[in-house]
Image (cartoon, rainbow, N blue to C red):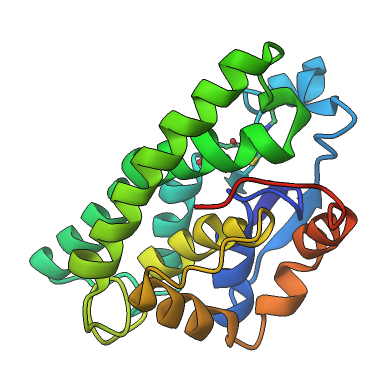
Length: 223
Ligand SMILES: N[C@@H](CCC(=O)N[C@@H](CS)C(=O)NCC(=O)O)C(=O)O
């Protein structure tokens, strides 16, 4: 099984983390998205949406990090993607929530416009409005995550780690780049600390941690 990836990509790191923690046999092939190779015909034939990750298993090709994680978990029969209908539905629910609620506002609406040039709005007024909108909505989702999604639970779906946790952690940890400390969200902070304690976390995240370090003189708005 092969996964086209980039080590700094927030949508690739959940797959890298899950594979590393579960000894899944995956060959990772670098696509250097910072050089624009994803727009060349060769890669567009692999993914017309010009994005990583992309999984290849024989002649089967799959895009979308959430779908890839589920496929990978099932190929190794992982308990992190339970088979029981309601447990599985809960994992799917959490992953969709991270993808379409939290990530849309926190990642794409608040963090990326501050740290990735291609997401930064040229007009300062538009940039300020984007960040203000993203921050307010992200604060709301953090509160929901803290109080209702996690609450006293150890992980996003209860007391056992699932692929929802592998999926969510790199998105939430992006707050480190803009120096969010999550003090206002103690359950989120506790959960993220436990995810960061996974043996593979540091290695999987070294590219993004290096990028964060390169921005240490920059000023950011945090939550
Ligand atoms: N919805 C996709 C998003 C993937 C995505 O945003 N990939 C980014 C890296 S994090 C990418 O490849 N960007 C290159 C581009 O847009 O040209 C998923 O979850 O897999």
